[in-house]
Image 1 (cartoon, one colour):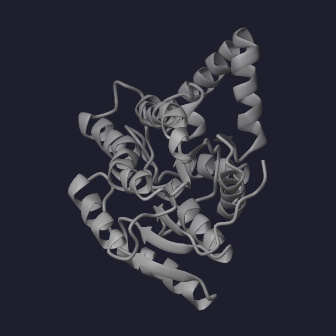
Image 2 (cartoon, helix red, strand yellow):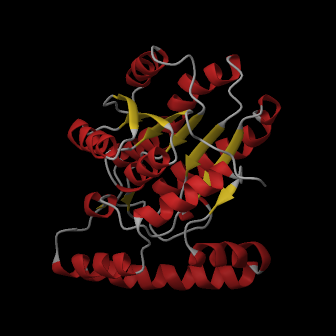
Length: 282
């Protein structure tokens, strides 16, 4: 499909203080978009704003908000809609990572993952997409899910619940919003070298231990950069693609899951055994 232009159009990016969110915001700014940015961390958010404006980009709004709070997202929408009746693109990037076996995960950890990773995007959709429809903005909705929204990775039950939920919402809205000319893009990143790896929680595991730090370093060695992920996300959005994968290994694993289920089952069983053995050492 022909690549569309985002120049002069309004784009909302959540999770814009760091990682994929910041890289996406910077790439959109480079393409001429008018940006509306949010993140839980105001210091990082203002850092993103300053960096973009120093390069000549246009940030119309940079307001800290917790996407898990519908009241805060409504206040964010009021601030954005005071500057434009509707945005042309909504990019749900914000998220947290908490992993662990079901016997170690607390209720509070389950709730936190669902509130941020699933209810967060829902709050944003609820507060921004109706205005896009009302004002005829035939634009984009981008939802960042995860490889854990495609396949059954070990210790990812809570995280996958949130990310499969984002995938389900996207699959429905892909068709529901088509009649309004709004394209939906679902992003399923694999390993990306972002600050989320530093804040990763694993229930019942000391993430400050030397063994865990070695595992994290191994993960980061195979990770793509936020800038490469952002390039693929924005390119996919502007070409109105539905599924965007930021790394080839996840695309391959998803293909095995779809076309060779017995092989996929063997791979996931083996991965679970390996992670279980590693978990006993942590």
